[in-house]
Length: 213
Image 1 (tube, rainbow, N blue to C red):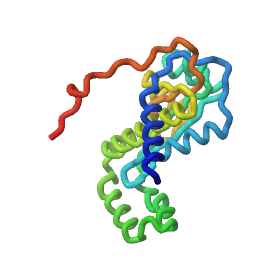
Image 2: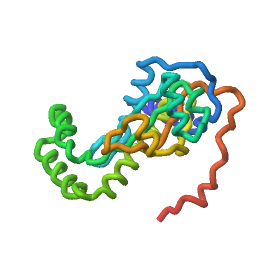
Image 3: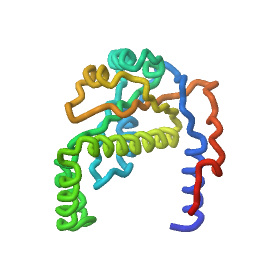
């Protein structure tokens, strides 16, 4: 890859990060096609996760009927109705139990040897089995990284997004029939922003948040 191409890609990514805002007001009655939704989730799953557990799941709430059910579980927030789609980003517990199957694709792609996969599976089992606190912590980390990746992907596609933590987890889990091993980490509303949303709000000075040792 040439230096100029690397510079162009870095510049483009920086522009996406610099321009991203949390959109509070979306154009209503807009939709996203299945392939666009699939692309957003495909890119979201490029986020990292411990042992490559991929301990996340995404529910794309797009139909009007599902949006109204989501609104009821999301403190009545109108943005989940106006947004083209709102993703329920879920964390998955007990993901270590399926790790061997997940990593087999890396063996078949000649990325990891079987011995390394076997060692990872053993390590993950020793750390995670019976440790629900660690399982939940890892699921929250993974789902959060995936949600941020999804938001940057949306920005890069010319869409707006907003992460949302205002919801009733129990009501949402019941309404959307989450498995016992799944729990909602956050909502990510995605769609077409109306004019007049706030610009990106100023951040703290770097000197206040960075220590170099």
